[in-house]
Length: 344
Image (cartoon, rainbow, N blue to C red; front, side, top):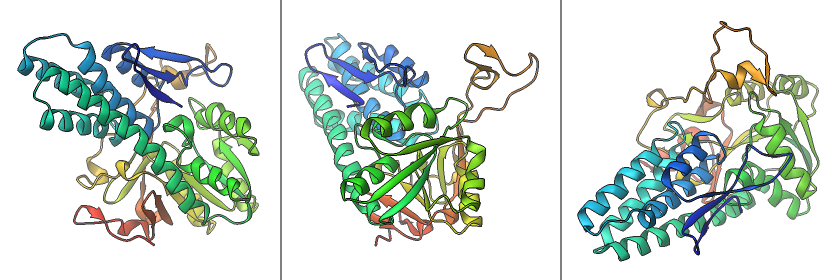
């Protein structure tokens, strides 16, 4: 599993995704500050995994804060939860996971001991629901794929981005498990190479054929009829927009131009019915992610860099949204009165 709770030490265990593909090592987060560091460094990343991290983070705060006054205790846990939820601004799952566990514990607990028990139980439920959601949406999405075909994906929406199985790659895994002959083209995903490092590592380990390409080669391969459809994950879906790893919008435009299906695979926890796309802050990452590579300077000193972590894709470019509740098509009809509206 990508992320889990260690009951013996009351800490969070997670795969350090920055160490892949050369080594697969585990990190133990014993404090809220260490978890926040792991989130900001992308040691744990991917919207569903961040939701689980937020949920477990509240449980971690609940066990690590040592106070005897219940009101002061709950206030401290809530502040810790807010700090976790604000560690990265764009993905909605992180704050969603925090809010869900805080709300459950605050509504039901009447003592510190009870608060800890409820917080951990709810966090474990969040993690288990993510696994179930990924398998369910994988099965729905597998039905969209041809019996033999090649799928393009961007960034990493696999087991590493979730508890296990994955969203976009969950569809691929479910299709392969059903007997379909599916191969994957993984965009390398600059500047941190989540496609080359993480997606390729996952699929190679599973024995699923995968080829890595430069991000800028995607349109060329679409034009050459080397791609049957595009499947990506998402970090937030608002009333009108999909937010995902920067480069997604470019792929959606190219897919539209080449009359290829463009699917977005997400659990329902990634939907945000409150906001429009224009209201969402897109995280800007540090300069050195672009200006340095393998310890070498790749951009001259003094030259500015723009490094957004995400971009915004209009729902009008999305062929369908694949969720654990079914397939929503057209994607732009997903929400009416704050609820999923149209599922086929």
